[in-house]
Length: 85
Image (cartoon, rainbow, N blue to C red; front, side, top):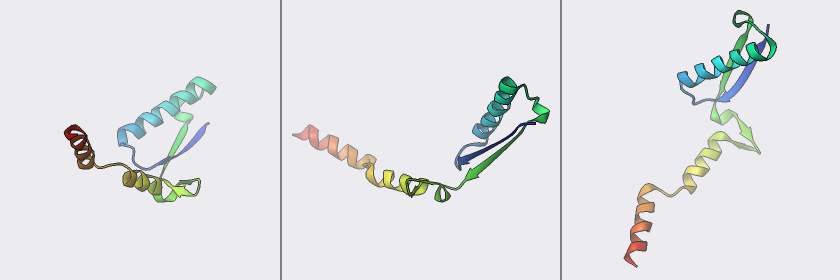
């Protein structure tokens, strides 16, 4: 009776989560011969503010990436400026 527990950052679609559950069930069936009715899968979605690595949460990393990325308009301005020279 396998019990498979997965923690994943929140943000997946219901279809993606369903696909993950299906794949985990298949993995248990294929690797240890578990039957679907005896396999339990628990998916825990963790808020981005509650998951950290290297003392930085997912939310903090995402915010830093957004702040560092040039905006679409800024990128267009840079391209236009380069063309004018």
